[in-house]
Image 1 (cartoon, helix red, strand yellow):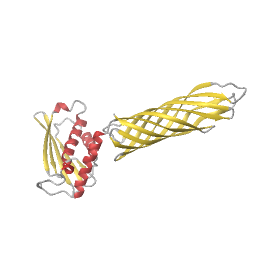
Image 2 (tube, helix red, strand yellow):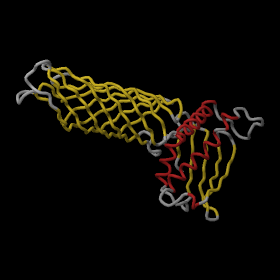
Image 3 (tube, rainbow, N blue to C red):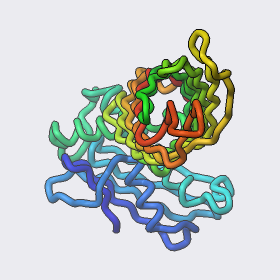
Image 4 (cartoon, rainbow, N blue to C red):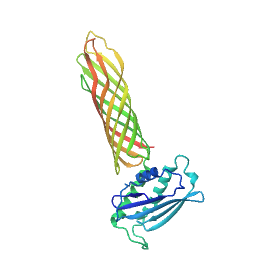
Length: 314
């Protein structure tokens, strides 16, 4: 009987009858993620047991909750699990079943009639409340998040260049892997850089894609991502005074690898605010020439950008 154990002593034992059409190993893995549990065990735990069996073509959940000291039973239609998604959907249903019992600890902290059985310790009760609160929070977190922001980008090269930038991004956070996110986005920057014979207008547009590790601490999310960026830069030169050369414009591709760091604060599931930093390395540099000799401006090597972000969940 696999045991999912909370480090502070809250334990869930599950038994899945062979007649239930699920991948049992994957079922327990998803259930552990949903309840925020590990696979350790402890002798002094208050045990909650769930038996999943078949009855009249449907699936029956039987709960013996050692934390609230009550029993619950629920029937699920077998055809409601769907083909191919039955393992994940059953794990979610069991997690909701257990949390529905543990929510009582917050709604009615002191029962009007003392239940039969050994009362759990205060640490066990606090742990179950924490698991229930965390599961409810994860349940309402959206899978898709759209963010927009503004900041500054610094480009290295022959002349250090600082450009105001705007960005728009979408990120996907799979339910089964809350610590992973996939991000795609667009970035736009514009600025004017002085050079020895005049000035150069710089316009930049690019697309990026990255995979990120997400560590959640309540309403705070820390993200670390790696990926790449590709786009185009438009350079338009304007000579000083009576210079003997004429201004010209050019558009050149650019691209590179990037490392992204972000800290987001989400007071609600639908809204977030944060700060993000991006460190990149140009593998496809851009150059501007006044003649066929050395360039008067080159965007190459590392870049660094910092932006403030506002986002919504979908």
